[in-house]
Image (cartoon, rainbow, N blue to C red; front, side, top):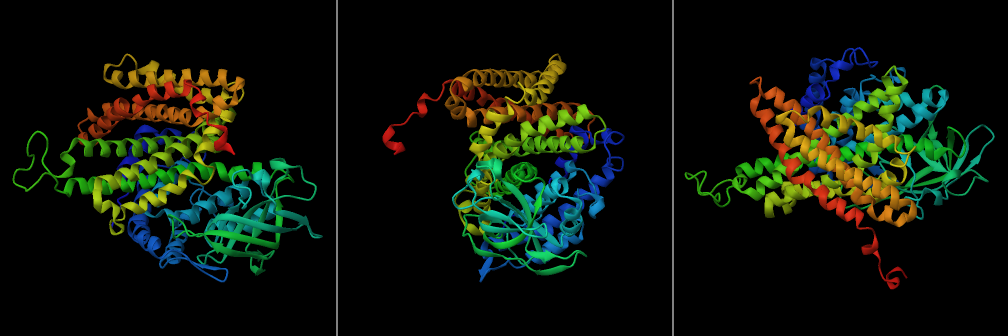
Length: 596
């Protein structure tokens, strides 16, 4: 059975040394009490929950799965009790508005909790994760009555929330949805239609589930411009907050999936269910994107979390498993063989896993800090700059962290060899669980198109400047430092390739959109590599300074070595990516017979 140990020291490094969140104490609202002692306590308590409660349930949930019987879904053994503990311990209210029972803590701290939950039990993490997304959508777009009625139950963990978007004929193209909403006489609407792939749409872990449903009003404009958003509770809520009668919706089935077996993926039928309009008519997609954009960042963290637990177990196995001898001669002559970790290819795989997980953590937490700046900074210009960065980085985090999460979990199985392929060792579950993250919340190809088609051209590159300028500034500031030369050199070359690719896309995309679309996924990967390189260069700078103090020398030396590996062995891929991008899409041409 796999084990999990929350990487608390790595979280501390990012929070306190890389991001230096203490410098925001007197700048960002709610940061005044965020001291290292408080963050350490939060990390320790969340680690205890994930290590002792959630992770032991992970294989149970995978093996037993959810049970479906006549419209009712039963969670695997232990999940309901774990969720009650999660809620009672205050984790469901972590970043929520105190006005509705929340604690108002920063998103940058919540990012660490989210990673721990994803690593220890991804299927469990979908329940609170989706609820938080639904909370955000209602908190921003709901009216006062809706907030008062639904948010306290979601914040406390008594209720969960889900989003109902996709339909059998619609998929990603939500303009094709058919679910309809007809106005009643009391300000409510009757919602009729079928939604599929609704994660956590029905279960027995809480007393009520709040659905946010996309539907179309009579006479609405065609396509995505005619979509409205409705709040549809599973159990109707009375004016005093108590529960009333069941709503007219039911779960028609749950899917039998490749992974995340403990999370029910539901078909939900709305048979004239009572709902209320959230926000303005025909503006529902914009409101739903409030939920979806945050969800996309947290889906990226799912790839990171699974990569972390896979790395931890692969590293332990590589240190213990005896197999062959080191190429330069026996490292442990008193043993019948050397451990796997002496072999260069094993070390290459382990370093690749570590470089991706730690780089992803730094980028994700840096982005979460920008979320806090958008919500808490007193200056409008700072909030706007942070929002630009978030908009640009959301498709990168969602796509690249999930893709590399799958790659890292595959490497974990490879290091285990044949044992990795056997269920009881748990490594193959990480691959199966990770695979969905590349698909849901907008498949990774859609994210790439969003990056090149929307984010890069925005206001003649306004979003892009939120990234390019800080990277350029960092290179300029550290170029003369001989210790940093090996890092700034590679970062400069990577940035140069990214700028050339961006210019090529700008020129070719207008003339032939297929050029842009054909290069989108490789461009996103190039962008992500440079973003990771920026994070690793900053990590190296901190570690180089800290190791001179003599404290935790090995910890900082490992950071420097991993940064060096990423820069020389992984970031170097930018050369081939640039060549592939600028080669155009002619190689993607296929015979007409294949398209018929």
